[in-house]
Image (cartoon, rainbow, N blue to C red; front, side, top):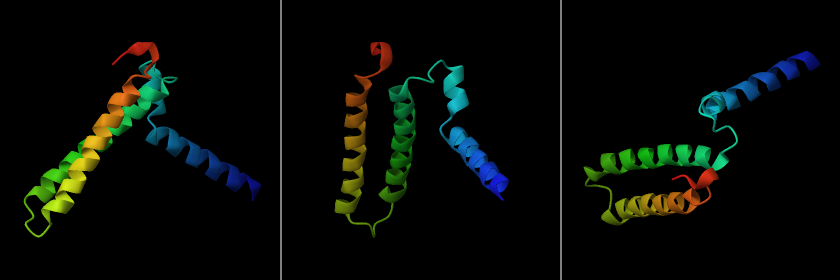
Length: 93
């Protein structure tokens, strides 16, 4: 029974490594640059927010105020990314 738990734990750890792109960052020499990694994922999130904004643009039932909130979130994320970039290893942008 303990073996099943260990197998499940190992499987979960492998899936997490896949989700966090551990091997890709190792290949890039960025395994220890957590800020770089965070910026990659935040950039992906920013892209998804942009797609959501684009989709909602054509929906007249969604109030402009609500659409504006999403744009504000995008701007805050963009600003945050800029602040975080200052902490990149080697001062890279």
